[in-house]
Image 1 (cartoon, rainbow, N blue to C red):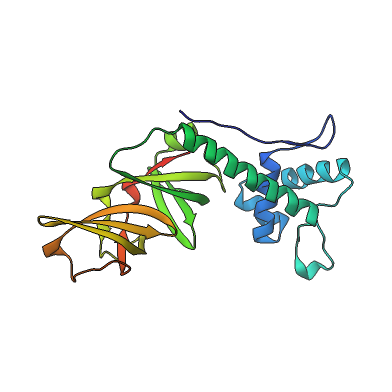
Image 2 (spheres, rainbow, N blue to C red):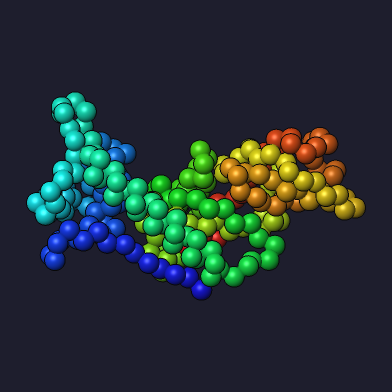
Length: 231
């Protein structure tokens, strides 16, 4: 089960600040330019400008606090407050979804935020941010549309334990701190701390380059095509 809620800030009976406006403000904060933000969101400059102009005319507060053109487009305290409240709402929505999400056996779940959506030839490549790390996940166009995924959406990246590759420095490779080690026959079961999130991995004794201990750092890789994306 999944809860899909969206928030609107109501300025008056005719004008509302919707997710579309919030995504635009978020992108302007990153790019410091309305034109660049519009391009990165695949909308026209006129569309972006008209959307912001409508809000500006309906609000008693300015959306931007520019003091000079050299600074680019700088968000005002009012705009920053909108983004802060939207982030709080997203955390609340994620918590609700956690409460309604079925437990997944033998799978890892990593919370992340979409920062890039790229169309490849036969699939969609998502770049998601977890802490300071960027995780890539490959999904179908149908999955993108079904989940209605957009930039800055909070998502859950799911992968089976046996899809985690240890001591691998290919794409989607990261460092984690070992929190627990459980040895059973020729297999070693690792509990890892990755950006304050717990993931599990399995390694064969004779395949690892060294003997690891708790609190050691180990490198692991998650193949992009082995990741399931969920809200």
